[in-house]
Image (cartoon, rainbow, N blue to C red; front, side, top):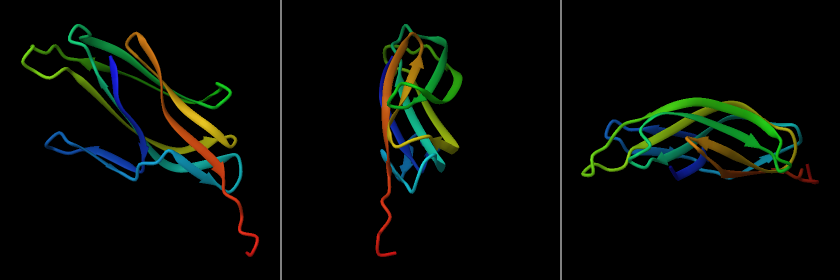
Length: 136
């Protein structure tokens, strides 16, 4: 398995023609204080599988803080179909809309993605405190 794409954005969807539309990609969030809540965000992971990795594979994405503490977990599974040599390798497209994600403190967060027999760190998100304008 290979991670082809990992991103955070405002919205993502697969069009009827199979193309992936993504809007508002980000890797940094500003917060007025902590804990901070991101009302809505979408994470996208595109996995490409080897031809011998057919069948059901468990998936898990843990959002980890910079001290390796888990903030949230997303779990599921995917079915990887068999492909002939003439076909492109099988892919799994995970588009996950998350509501009200709580970031306990400022810092760098990342998703730890477990798919099949592999675990990968992916998708850094940096959460910073937005300084108040002293003139206000």
